[in-house]
Structures are given as structure tokens and as C-alpha cells.
Image 1 (cartoon, helix red, strand yellow):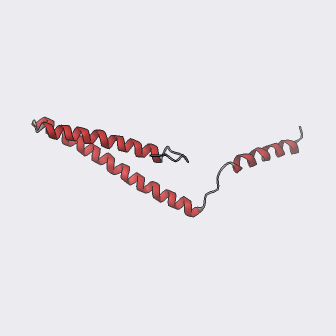
Image 2 (image 1 turned 60 degrees about the horizontal axis):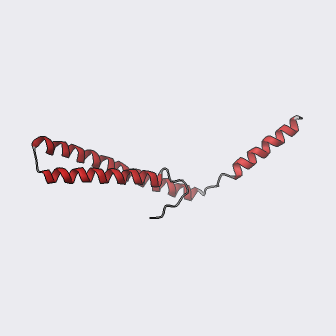
Image 3 (image 1 turned 90 degrees about the horizontal axis):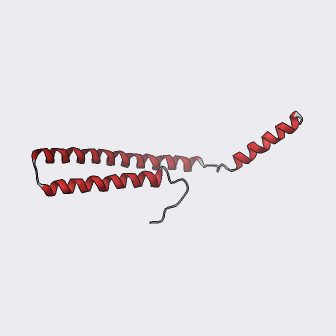
Length: 101
């Protein structure tokens, strides 16, 4: 095979690979980055809230506090962790798929 033929095959493969990649509008990309920044902020707040609830639960258990408070904190930790996981999956790992509620 000649060098020209090989180069044409390579160019054809590159063209087919790049045509599959969607072109993004800079405004869309900026808006998407801004949206992901907001998601990141919410995730960080959830992480801090979960950590604080765990710390509070440990203090309540150590001091022999009210059992209802312990149950409420345990439930809050469970639910907040679920929401954190779901937000991660629905945003960072969703791709272009649209999730129906």
C-alpha cells in the first residue's frame, strides 16, 4: 500500500471519529459548567451535613441522650446519603440520558 493510500485511510478514520463528537456552543458549555458548579456546591453541602449529623449522633449516643433524637439523626444520615448518591448519579454519571421521575 502506498503512503498516500495509508494517509487517506487515516484521514478517513479521523474524520469519522470527529464527526461523532457533537460540537458544543461555547455559551452552552459555559452554562453547563456553571450548572455543574452548582451541583458541586450542593454535593459539598450534603457531605458537610452528613458529617455533622454523624458527629451529632456520636455525641448524643455518648451522652446517653434521647433515643428519638438518635433515630432521627440516623434517618437523616440515611436519607441525605441517598440524596447525595442520587444527585451524583443523575448529574456526573448520567451522560446524555434523561431520567424520568
